[in-house]
Amino acid sequence: MPSFDLTGKRAVVTGAKRGIGLAIAEALAYAGADIVGVSATLDTGESEVRRRVEAAGRTFTGFAVDFADRAAVSAFAEEVQHDPVDILVNNAGTIRRAPAAEHPLADWDEVLAVNLSSQFVLTQAIGQGMLERGCGKIIFTASLLSFQGGINVPGYTASKSAIAGLTKALANEWTSRGVTVNAIAPGYIATDNTQALQDDPARSQAILERIPAGRWGSASDLGGAAVFLASSAADYVSGITLPVDGGWLGR
Image (cartoon, rainbow, N blue to C red; front, side, top):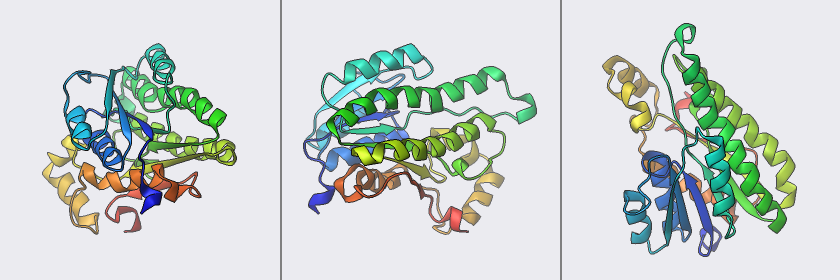
């Protein structure tokens, strides 16, 4: 369908080195978008994300940016806007696990910096250019913990709950000016961030028993939702957090 075609669009995808960010970058590329990939440890020369984007026939530009460093994020935001950004996928994130009563404050600060504060810094900067042009698509990566409390991840839950709220707040201000703002909430996806859960037989089994789809999700399961929200097919969709969870929240 033409409305899903992203040909000629330029998309910035953070956290693009692996997992969900890699899968979203690949999906957007196959839909026609050129990709700017960003991760803290991305090899800006050869990388898996570059290989996949170029295999789709699109151009790739890589940046290594530490999202715990606000100054570095601001500098990247300024540099990347030398050419217009049509799509921004805020996927960079981190997680730290420890019971709330013992949770190191340094871990709390890092998770909030990476998952929330830097997301806003980058979105504010790139969003201004979108608002000036009167068009743009912004997509955050939220979480099931945007809806639920989780266990032993207080900083992560707080940040992802805030991302759901920020999505609505920005949509309220920007949708009338041509910029839609949405979020995708992945379910239990088999990535590095969930490796500890996958490796715990009891937790993994309990999770599987609640997922109607009967399996852990794969990163590629997020691609279709990202293409939809980035495309003109979703021009009248803004302010939502879309779960892609195999039915978990409906259980």
